[in-house]
Image (tube, rainbow, N blue to C red; front, side, top):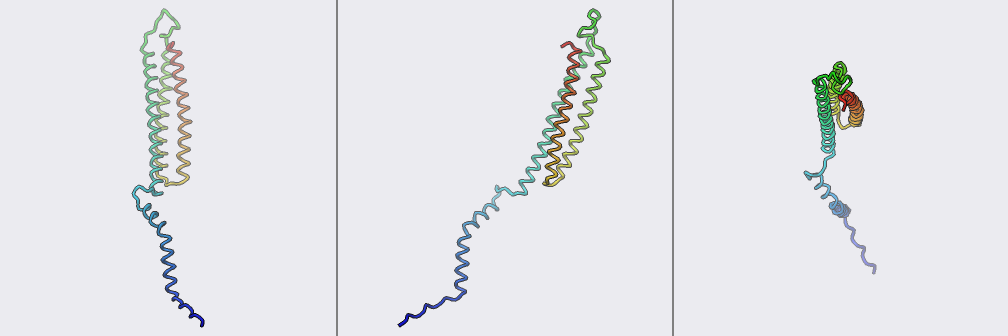
Length: 178
């Protein structure tokens, strides 16, 4: 005799088993992914971008403020030197001595220093306007370009101002005989 053929299971049974096996295989990957997205310490791309933008803006402002303080200290020091030379009495015994300074030259240096301070103030205001514009931009390539361009332009402007301050200081040294 021929053994009887095994009874076939209904198709619904096979589909259920396949689904359960698939679910059992995917479960180990699903739990860690769900846990990571629900974690409060897990980085969220949008939040990361916002923090990065905010840090960049704060960095631009902090850099601007540090530079402003350094320039203010330097100009105050030069202004004191000019005032000190202006207040020194002339010594008629030494015609070209260190205390015999032409007041017109000191006034010219004072004007140059005042002009430089005005330029610095204008540059500060323009930089703050540009920082606000950069801040208003979303997370775009344009914002990153603008920030990099502002940084480069500020570095160039600082070098020019530093050179002007150095020129004024050099003339003061010559006048003061230092």
